[in-house]
Image (cartoon, rainbow, N blue to C red):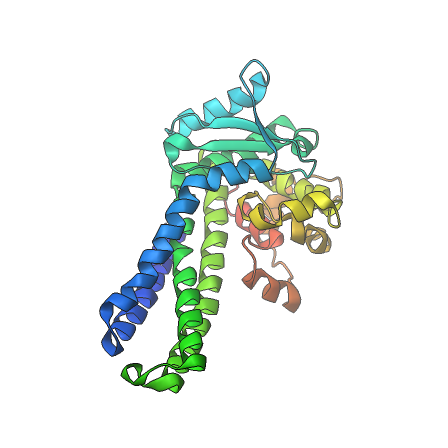
Length: 323
């Protein structure tokens, strides 16, 4: 409930900012001019909504597979979807070697769950099932649509900032209080663009915690998901300078973890795997529950600018779900 409450509070804050900006601009100038930014932003998002799945599928090199081609993968997805009470998503395999998984789609009925070739050879069946539970939970929660909607607000702030700075430099006109006033609005909108972007990233991190909890609610064991995340960090770190990682840079928010940060997270994860056997078992999670994890200042600052929670904090959260 606390994760849901934080997401609803975030949406209230974001749309409160949007409402305040629109009312403020509408007070000082023609209200129709203020609304044009919202209209343009949602037109842009509408186009993205329509073509987004095709772009993700192309970028990730997804090949959709039949039950005959991948019976075990289809079986796991079907069982998890039935437990989640959603239609069975379309199943695909990305031809990328970076070990990971992702889900996308417009609605629950349009859900698509994909794994990369790399993850199929890295995880055990239980670990893969826990990761698929995480992705199914994203579809069940509809959080992809929520993040897309929230992403419209920084976009609106950017357009307002660009438009008013342009007016300020090339003549704002007396009606708007002159060029200096237009520049002031533009600078304010740019600050709000930066702030709302950070809030969208915060929302993205909340949805990852929420999907982890969702995987456990679908019957997956927390230590299996924790081990999967641990293995993914090590597996992804091998690709830190690869062309594949550069290819997926723009869509890595869809992944179950952020492969770009994997290299920096490895040292922190040594605090979790006490016997250094490459897995995080149930007992290690119980120990972690009572243990205070240590994060450097750099790691704490870096997390603010990322789509995924710090991996050590995320596994610590999973320890609270172990029963």
